[in-house]
Structure formats: C-alpha cells, structure tokens
Length: 222
Image 1: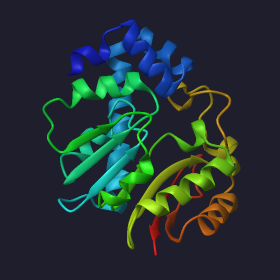
Image 2: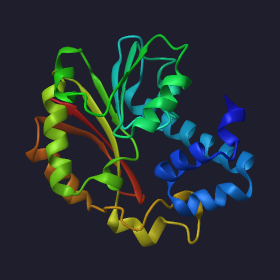
Image 3: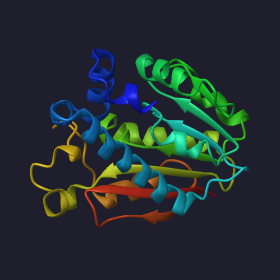
Image 4: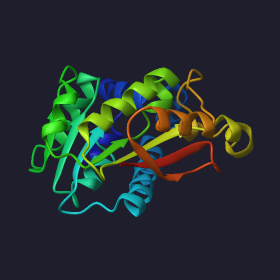
C-alpha cells in the first residue's frame, strides 16, 4: 500500500489536495515519500487520541463521517466490530474500495446514501475528522448534530474536531504547511460549539478541548 501512496500521480494529487489543500500538496511534491510519512504519522496520532477517549472494541459500531482516504478508519477497523464509511467525494470512496478490499468489517456508503437510515444499524460511535471546519458553518453544524442524535441510541458517542478561533494565532505554527488546508476554513469559539451541542440533539459534553487551534470534542447521547 505504501508505494501507491507516495507515487506522484494525478489521481493521488487530487485526493491529497482535497484532504490537505494546495499548500500542503506543493510541500508533498518536493519530497513525496518523506512528507507522506509525516502525514501518515499525523493520522496515526489522531487515531490514538480518539481511541484514548472513545476506546474502540469488538462492540463498537462506527460511522466514519467523511472517511476520506481511510487513513484513520484503517486503524479503527483493527479494533472495532463494524465500520461504516461515508464520504461526499466518489473518488475518495473508490480509493477506499480498493484499500479495504480485503477488510471484512467495513462497509462503504455512496455519497447519496440516506445517512438517517443508519439509525437501524446499531451505530454507537460516530467520528467526524477534518470535516466540520472544512465544510460546515455554524448552522449546518447544528443540523448535523441533530442528524447524529437521530442515528444514535442512549450512550452513543460523537467525536469531532473543529477550529478554535480563540487559539488561531496563539498555537498555529507560522508557515507550517502540514497545518494548512484552505483560507476558507470555518472557525468557532468554544461557546458556539457548546451552544450547538446543547441546542441540537440530546447530548452531554464528555470532553471539549479549548487549548489548541485544531480542537477536539467528545459528546454522548443522553
């Protein structure tokens, strides 16, 4: 798998630009193998953080909402009983179809799949990695939380990351390409995130990070 990930192909360029943005893509082109290793290490670190709080196991039925290239889902699949992967981009899903061809506990969902119907799939964990700040404003974020609440039963968890405007200048390294995607990323305050969690779905906040620009939150359905 590693060889095709560092090949400078147009298909891979498209996938990486969608995931990380043009600035990072140019950084990658200068040394594809080394930079992609940094990228994989970053995704492994993200998985370890998520697993610290979520604790995936055989009873975990997971929806990876915005699976992308499956760089976090591949780690989750090794622990969870079942993983559903959804993405709006058909090219990402096609890549994942090849990537997970020998993985029995993952099911990929096409972009037009009615995600609300997953309420009958016993999903107890939802991951939303590198999606909220890239594609959702505050109103759409609230609607997404309501949708997740409809899918989950009592005790179900949602892990999501977001961009904290209060920490943007303080903690974001200057000219560090790995941190960039697009200048249009949406930023929230912790108070806005807490407000949307309170008003959209029946959730308790388990963990909310306020210390970093790329913030993380875990909420649980009551």
